[in-house]
Length: 174
Ligand SMILES: C[S@@+](CC[C@H](N)C(=O)[O-])C[C@H]1O[C@@H](n2cnc3c(N)ncnc32)[C@H](O)[C@@H]1O
Image 1 (cartoon, rainbow, N blue to C red):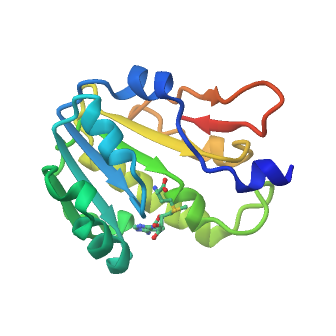
Image 2 (image 1 turned 60 degrees about the vertical axis):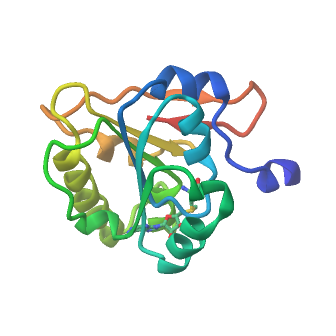
């Protein structure tokens, strides 16, 4: 168990390739200090925008030598109040950002979290291209009640994949 707790949340290469290969326009939501952007660049994703509400993350990452030559737009921005135009992005990816908004029990979600999540999902749906746009949400925990809140009737279909090996603490990609 201790081993699981300290292992980073890494998306298996095959899953990443299947979901994102050759995507013209990717938005990273709550990018943190993730190296996912350079992985995606190698998967032929030429245009990437990375946002986080932490200006420290954004300034640190945008100054990193590994990222300097990549055409990435780094912006300090809250995922709940995004200022991008509507119908703009092909894939928006959240690896751990929504999880970071949550605290407390997965079986008894706080009203504040539910409200923030609703606002966030509304923003994601707004910026995604209506035809073929995808939101990839990668989380460590079992989905619990959060899964129900991901549904947005008439806006998108939810498809859940369990990543990782049997016997692992599973993590989920919706
Ligand atoms: C668990 S970290 C994951 C970082 C990165 N995506 C990764 O996979 O390593 C969560 C990140 O989400 C960011 N975050 C949390 N709430 C946010 C919000 N409302 N708007 C923008 N970023 C947010 C945090 O600042 C943090 O960098």
